[in-house]
Amino acid sequence: MSAADVLAITGAVQYGTVIVGIAAVAAACAVVYVAVKGAKMLLAMVRS
Image 1 (cartoon, rainbow, N blue to C red):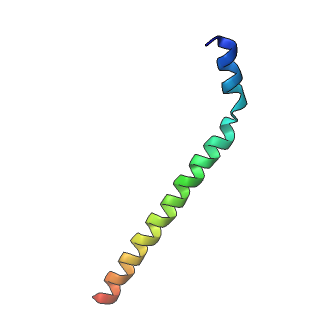
Image 2: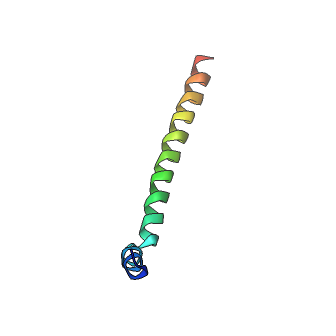
Image 3: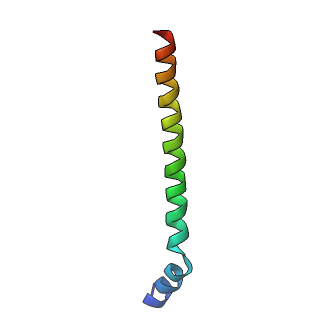
């Protein structure tokens, strides 16, 4: 591969949208984790 081919491939990718997508997935995982942790804490309070 020549440098021009690599530049054409990497130039076609918009890294800002990739980073936003990764951040959105991480935020969704964090929301699920916090919801599960909160539900466990609530159930522990109700049981005791």
